[in-house]
Length: 130
Image (cartoon, rainbow, N blue to C red; front, side, top):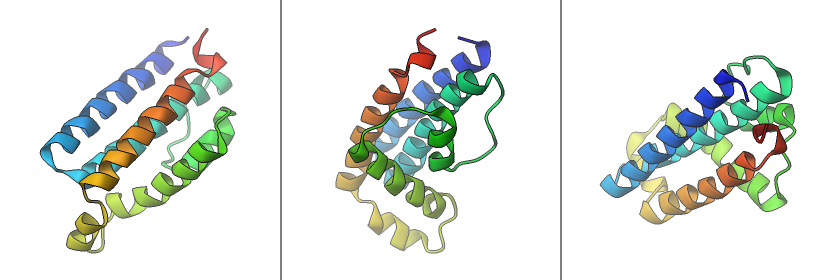
């Protein structure tokens, strides 16, 4: 595994820890944001190994899944689609109070748990086992 890939994976751990802290402190919009970022970076680690190049500067998880060729269940792909859509509104909210009310603790916790599942799946990809 190359050094850039290791760096991406270290950032995944950092972002997941940050998401967990945001969940504990009630900053639920940032849980969603950090979960998206962690998935993005995990996929970029695989893209790095798949292409032997730095991954593109995109936040689109669907593009990154296709580039990485990671095998992910339909259930997790559905979640990735959901969090991919949520990334835009959490990154550039038009109405912060409405955004905050859209992501209460229960939803943020669910996103966090499902993000852990996605990352576990991505980390099991054979390209990261070199």
